Image 1 (cartoon, rainbow, N blue to C red):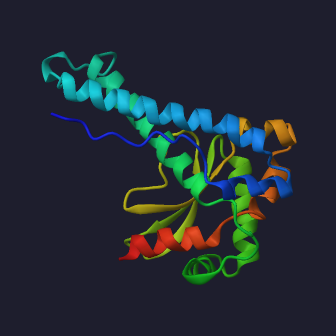
Image 2: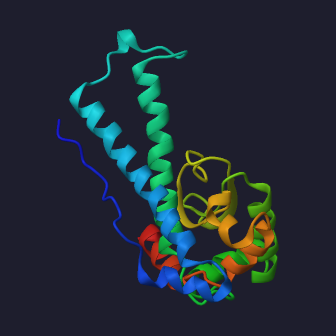
Length: 204
């Protein structure tokens, strides 16, 4: 079986670096890219391993086994790849209040953009790794979720529209331990056009 591999990013969209205007530096993004590449490489490494040596149910074990190691770590690697792809795709914009269809969904769920911001900030501060905005296909609404690790996706039957990395590597060089200041800066550089593009693709 020939594995389908993800694309290992060699660079970031130039728009990402416009976040320097709010204090999220080019150096932070350049170092962050290396982690993004690492998740992509490990995703591909595990896909190749699974293709080259299919798992044997007789050797699978929930305490330790090759099957468990590959499957658990694949979820972490691929989750990290997806999370970072959405993160870098949806920053480098003008920030401010949401626009387009996602603005309507935010208002429907939270009552106003300001109320959403308050919830988003709390989500980002309370999370250990990520804050996610997910679109629920069943309820046709959006919701903010905490992601404590790379493999905690928002929920089943959701499309990830916005992902804010709150691990310290995303902000420590620029804000040290002041995560709230980083979140305030992040809100000023969300690319709502990119978020709406993801939403449009999700609802097709």
